[in-house]
Image 1 (cartoon, rainbow, N blue to C red):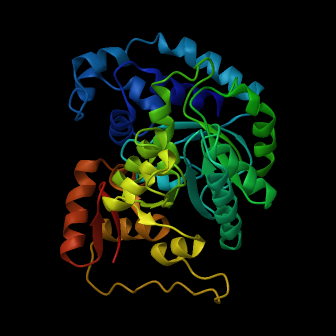
Image 2 (cartoon, rainbow, N blue to C red):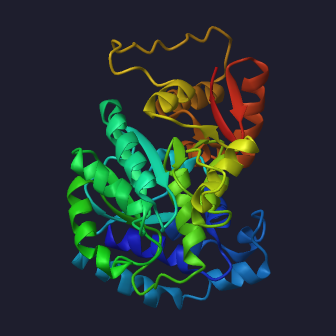
Length: 367
């Protein structure tokens, strides 16, 4: 793993190569290591990769930082989660700009239960804290993991409420795992590791700089099925998270408040402009997300048989979709070890045959 991880980290450190272009490189080259060994002429044919980006790929100075990070990860027993790994959060794979590589400290299966993000102002009121504790407790019967950002106010209240109710919780941070911000939450962070863990896309040495928080917020939004905004002013990180969740086609819920309350202005605006559904209890989440009531018997999922004539390539796509749906186009290509240019036309034919359907974000699933 260390050698493979070295190339994976190095890929994230290449100047001018963001998460979207890095995934394109993986789709065409097959692996992080292959990216660095590909011919420049081939790299230039990949959409989004120009001469400057290609030149940066061949500047191997990024390996010095990657080597240091591999050493840090192994020493601190941090779990790297690469985009193509089975244990990488499936919901983040459906976000076009989802992180290529994550670092996690704790114990968590990101694909085994419901995930709900709970966010809000750092200046939480007693009402906001009480509502957070109430709704988190109500989510326990649904086998829910609570996601938030370890900040003051609503965030830390959400984490504490989850642990109080013996629920899983994940804190997404805007810095490397060589520190905790804010520092006063260091003990809470250690406790969170026992219930879930601390997650970041930033390598060690990265400080909680201002520009890192919107990046952190997209992970909070993308990791979950829905985001609950408890209290928020007109502007702030919670509203950014809500906007990001909406852009990923995830449900957003907001707690209404009095018109005169400063930290209800953001929530009231989300509801008024139809950017969020009003939430009074976890039952609203169950209803709008179509969750099965804890009191109901488990329903058996029956795979719809496919009777249309398919060729061998189409059958292969269907087999991968059955095991991984819904799945993003680039990831489907990686699992098939086929270029996207081959996969997409076949998917189009399968759509015409009524076998698959496309969703926003180049995501596909069986009918």
